[in-house]
Image (cartoon, rainbow, N blue to C red):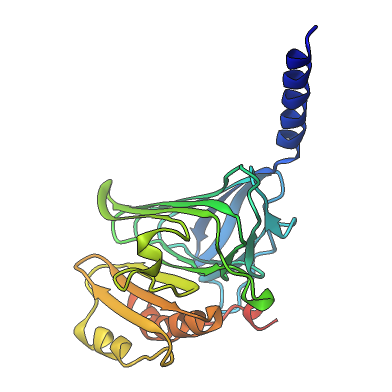
Length: 292
């Protein structure tokens, strides 16, 4: 047995050992409406991705729930999948307990896949806390939203490039991001991002302008009334930030680039306060976890 064969065998063994340490986590949730109450009818999980107890701070119509990834961070090779199905007239708000942390990849991509299927008149609000991309991270974030009839989706995504608290820059890494929204099987929104610190889009004036926080808030609920758009345009996010709104016949989109994840979330919360009475006929109600 020659040295080359032994070295290859040892390498294969090490790769297998590393692969066995990677998390493959999947959480599937079914919410249904029963007598005016949204309830969690089914949950199934594999690996470290779970849901905390469903809460009703707004009364029985709206279920609030926290999606928890117990390891606290996502390493290279980890893969998270969240599947949510909702019946007619159900209303669910999902959030996370803290910032998502995407670690240095060490040559292995980490991923998150969201699959949301909403029947007619269902409402899903996906309002997670920010994702922090560590130096050297290789991250793939994908979301497939399928809406039936008059279903509503409202969701935001806040990305921090590097750990600002540690003065860490994002000098090496990759981000692949995709959001696709369909209504009655027809594609109404398709967004893709392929980014690295060396990308022209990262530094370009037409891109992120070198800012370390990029965020997007999308609402799929039909055409937004003019007075709602006007009120949203009155919301500011600080002088060092750049913001923009787009109102299409089926999609409302807000963008933020700047230096503060907190400012991005405050901006989006202010928009949410304006938009929610329109698309959900109720005032905004902050999840308690946001204040802890």
